[in-house]
Image (cartoon, rainbow, N blue to C red; front, side, top):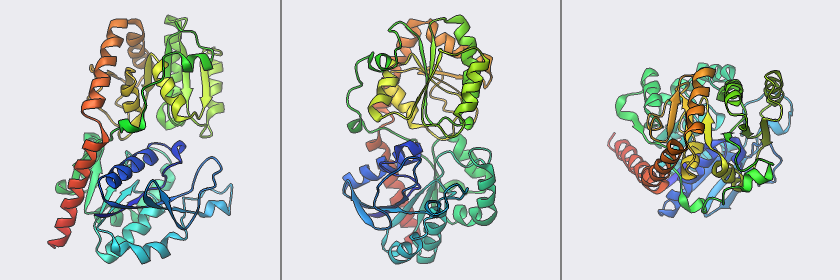
Length: 394
């Protein structure tokens, strides 16, 4: 198949979050299975980059366009990612593809790609990556997008991919027909992960003792992730475990001073570590050295959960946002979304060595048998074939 992937972020812009990682892993596995892959993306990053823009470039055997956007010319203005050269290329190329897979449905890349897909009769799939609710992320921008484009983009799709049952229900509430909804989780590709580093490397780098209990958060430091709730929860954990530290790994999304002020107000100076963005190797070292991985709120199916499982790190989360039922009692806990409940779940993991070991063993087994990209991509290939066949039968 000749497949177009449309994603706001792609390799090497890993700091942008899980969409970049998932879009790359799906694309690379499809390419390795013999498909012809083209990617439309942008060069938008919180860090400077020298990526080639507005022209085809080779990335691991795939054809990738990193479109420049208008933010380059109006720094400081709040603008959506606007790939102004994309329409000319899309108009010229889209007709040649068998199917289009669009990641993150509220972007101007999505609007452009879906418009030409409908014009040329090319079936496209939408994968919202947990971003369907208007209440997550930039609610104002989401409402603006939905006012003008959501109905055409969503209902013009030949199919949609939900990462979990919660997201599938959200598609139904938006009027998507049942036969168009496929539940396909994220996965992990073991070829991209060497054996986890030896325990102690991350701790040594940040001056954390071997016996210290490490509570880890890893991801964007954004209020929507429940960082404030986690800090308040840790204040209770810290009273019970006087050797525990909270490590917040991730880039500053503009709210770190608010979080640091919360840390100071709770008397947690010296007990909470902000590392900033770290390399992939350091990220896995952090998972390996953590006693528990905590994400208070999420949508979709975060890759960080699978990376934690790969390293055997128990998980504590909540049902705020989306819910992954496979976590509860198997690899960790789904707690209520309150400081007390979250602190209690974290404390249970930290206090019980046997429980922590049991969760660790189950986590490693689960990620290796169920959530691996080669198996998941086979399901995606079958979905592509199905929407192509349905398009031909019209």
